[in-house]
Picture 1 (tube, one colour):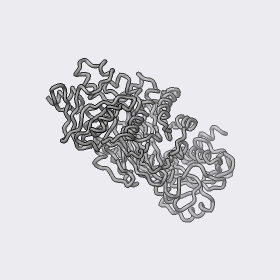
Picture 2 (cartoon, one colour):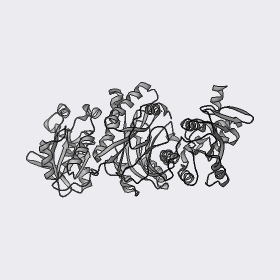
Picture 3 (tube, helix red, strand yellow):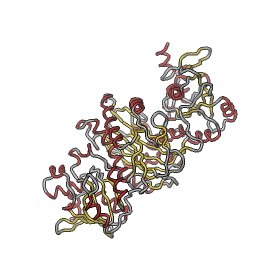
Length: 307
Length: 307
């Protein structure tokens, strides 16, 4: 266990947070509670699955390790407080590389006023992996849960979808500010972040809410990267439905709220209506005059499976 | 990201905890605060460093992954609430193996009334690694910190030390109950858990407290495993000072308290006085009539370094 370099650095560079009474330097961190609920999430990223260590900078890997966790706080509409990071690094890794990785993590944490309150570095004969646990707290507006969507609710997404592998997955900005703004100013029924592709994540939201949904192919905001990668218009939609790692927000909001949100466009990033929730439990994709079941894993595979 | 098997299992087997409002099944867990401070720690164990996957059962690995984190809560005198686990498993791992590993984790969590409130499984081409983050809360008696030891305080350890590699490191019971009992009934100046060997961890405690210490070689409780492994009486002490992964408690207590604790022996495990804190910052080992600097990494290496 070679935990000292990371801990030493964190000790020197520790940011204060009013709710972190004891950060680095003891056996654990102590967080002072306030009256609000705490939100906790943990996520691990590893070489060959979530990034290719040979094809990206260590700062990007650190950014992603922190970003995927901040995206989970955004998905709950929680304010970030503290992060805890475990690094697992190949034994031949240079200290400078580890430092740059930590820089990537800590820069994104600082952008969201979050302190890194614990961490360690383990050296081993395996590949690079990073686990981050984040702690946040709810605002007085409560959590944004996956359950709560009602038939008739409009489905909104932030930004554009698909093609994240072209670079977005390494430099995305987690939608923490957007989520907190929306829950403060609007009545949201349900929401989550898009990490495994719209098709799969929409099913999670509707399953949790006990409803179905109908989305409209031509309304889905397709990223420029997805368009560049696509072989055909159908392929563009497939990518937007199935690619994953968009780290955008998927929201279900009552129709009256949706009208106001869509007219006002209160965020720096576009909010687009892609369909609505329905009674029952099925998911449908409206594509021109055609309406067919939305495949589990996106457009193409589902089309193969179901038709 | 193949997160479903672990999450599915956790969803079916979820324990309730009065402070866990939302556990598995959304983007993050929600913990309801009470007036007490929260304690958070994270620790990762990996194949080839903290265990040899080919030489132990998956239940033992799960036990250790949870146990090292519970030991950190014990080190702070915090009551366990919730754990969050990330598994990183080789892609050829059988489902049954993963399930047995989860069983090992969840059995120990249950023993300490802790719920596993989040987790995911990632499959990759690398080796096995497990990260666990635990959340606890302080009692009304406050935290047990590394700082706070005073010159004159008696140094106590629970259990016996050294030779953990013979098996103890895979089946130890974290000293959560012992720590909570002691902080409730006695005035403790400082404390921590012993994870990197008495010599190194004692230095962490005295550094945090701004004091020195003097420990007596023949008073150090040496485990049967350390005695079996040792080549000589000196080697026994070296193992007790340097071996690591004892997961026992090291405490600094005022002399009057120490007298009471030692007379009463209130725990199921022995509490032994090994020395006392001193003014200054140096660590000394009294060995018969001789007194010499306590080496950083234990007995032997330090003797080489310093004499």
